[in-house]
Length: 114
Image 1 (tube, rainbow, N blue to C red):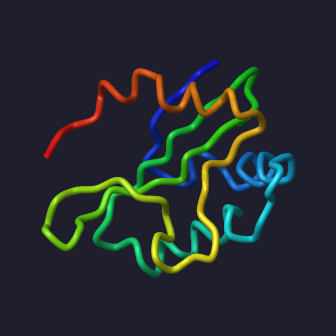
Image 2: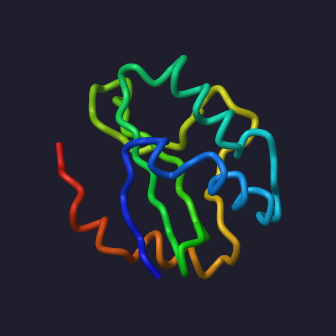
């Protein structure tokens, strides 16, 4: 399994993202590539994209669609893309064990601290 941090939608890819959505148990419009990409183009200008991707055998099996933004105190915080403007935000995965990979992977060590 490979876990990496991505900062560009294009590097994940619409087909791979939506293939994962189609296998996810919730499978809502608010999880699609198109919804996230459009939200980002409209509301993401002062935020940093923070997509944690999990891949196995060249297939995307997990995704944390997150962003770094500032809270009301000016501190950097990590939130789901769409926070406050979406009916549903969540991790996207095939199996709950993939969440462990997202939270325990080395990308945590590579985070910078404001």
